[in-house]
Length: 99
Image (tube, rainbow, N blue to C red; front, side, top):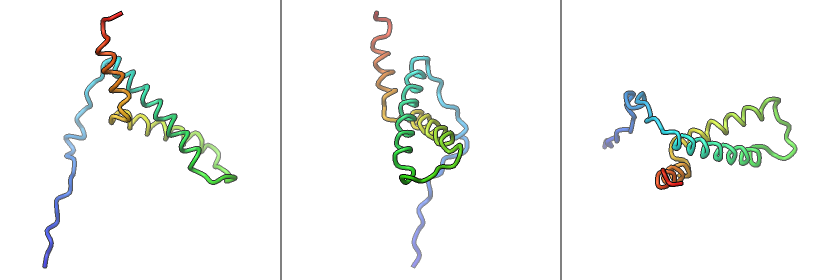
């Protein structure tokens, strides 16, 4: 008896090459803020859980861990993150021109 194999979901290369929409200044600032916030959170979590107490670290490991946390934070924020940037952007849009 043979079993049918379901097709895998593969994103076409053309979709991957499509540039993301440009963000206006307010939305970009909100996304950068969320990226920084997520990077700080990830860095804190990494320092807390990544190594056993008393374990020695490799020279320069902190720098690489920082860069990794910031890159992951930026990628998460660009993908929507926790939605903080969307909330800020929506709030800015509602209050645009007031003040």
